[in-house]
Length: 124
Image 1 (tube, rainbow, N blue to C red):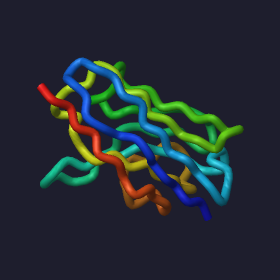
Image 2: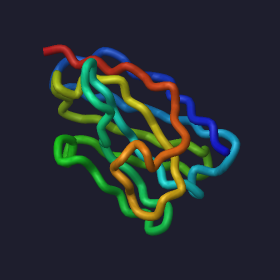
Image 3: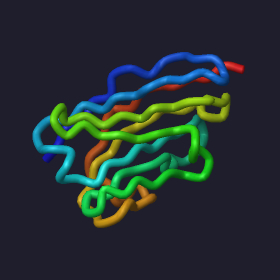
């Protein structure tokens, strides 16, 4: 099993940048498909982007493509989400997740391990 912890998050103005971290313990992140999700108040949890565990391919939601970048440091057992050109609609609680499915599933049901979430607020 793997335990995921997300320190960080915070408040940023629109147009700004923020990097989220996800620290994994227990098992190597390289053995899992990893992803970021987010959930705004009153909304369902939605896929932001993720790494495939088999091919290393990275996939992003259309809403964040070209603004957000996911990276992974296998030596440190860390996952990152670099967020640029932030918009107020990016405001949400962000979660990192790990799963064993092949490819990059976009459903939260395909990920069995979750961090506690971290709040990101983008002011206009």
